[in-house]
Image (cartoon, rainbow, N blue to C red):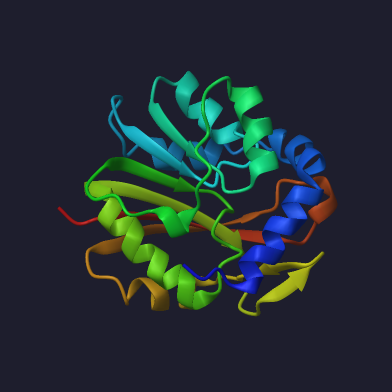
Length: 202
């Protein structure tokens, strides 16, 4: 597997800023996003938290009784998440997603936005295969149409048109809902996120 420089540069950033990133993201409240995802899952669902970062979302899902697999490719972040969660975090990214019909839900909150557009489209196929029939997929991106770099990190921007274009390339994974919301962080006034809920066909 050849990892692209855009992905590798993001991993270097998280290695250097792991503690700061952990503290900053741990405080973000995504309750409304959890609700639209979890309402489509049964209480015994198995969820993959794909790129769990601080472990914030994994902890929330486990508190609500769900079975959760937490994946985080960055070693330093994975160690911090393990300490916070008190359970194992697999060192893996979307590039290692090769399961079939395994998960009832896949949660990828702000974790695929360092892929370029081509790799994101490929990842959608991996997501579809890994989901059970009628399985639910959540993902989120910074809202916009022009990709950019910040602090050495590449950001794949997403608007409704780009998102539909990506999903049109994948048979059996359909968008159910798209939501645009403001960034929850007080220092990001005027920045927005695009959230997507999709489902694998039965």
